[in-house]
Image 1 (cartoon, helix red, strand yellow):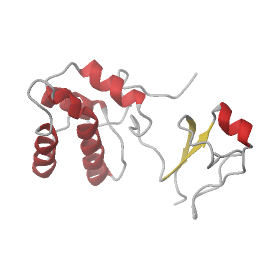
Image 2: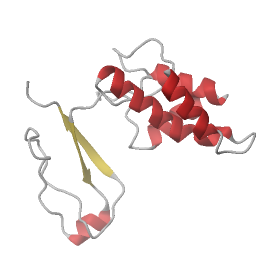
Image 3: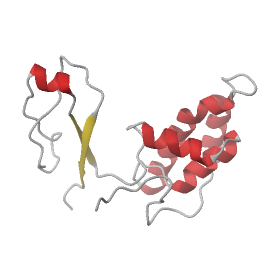
Image 4: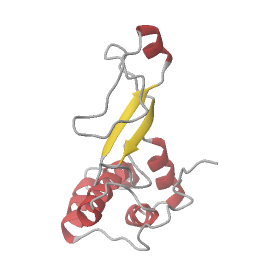
Length: 152
């Protein structure tokens, strides 16, 4: 059984409510204003990023709880499922807290053909079960994700 939380199945421990702070609300309005009337939903990625940044300021963890995605949907006047789809499609959006260090490993065929190289976590990060890394020559976009909390 996997421990993957999806937007439709909220991560346990997330806040029950979320609302943009005054500063983030103004930033959200600025992003929405970039789009013509009727196309404001196109600002969904920008607003999800703002919500993640606010969560990082408030909790120290950069992720998107379901309450934040629901708030973005309400601000943009779109069904929540469309926001969940965006959040779960793009790997830059985390729907549950991740560790302090986050390493992604390329798993695409071009990387394998180009020769995989050993990888290591960022300086100061705890060691991980990571044996292969992305090839700089392939420009890969699909990856496995690994994260671990720093030692206390």
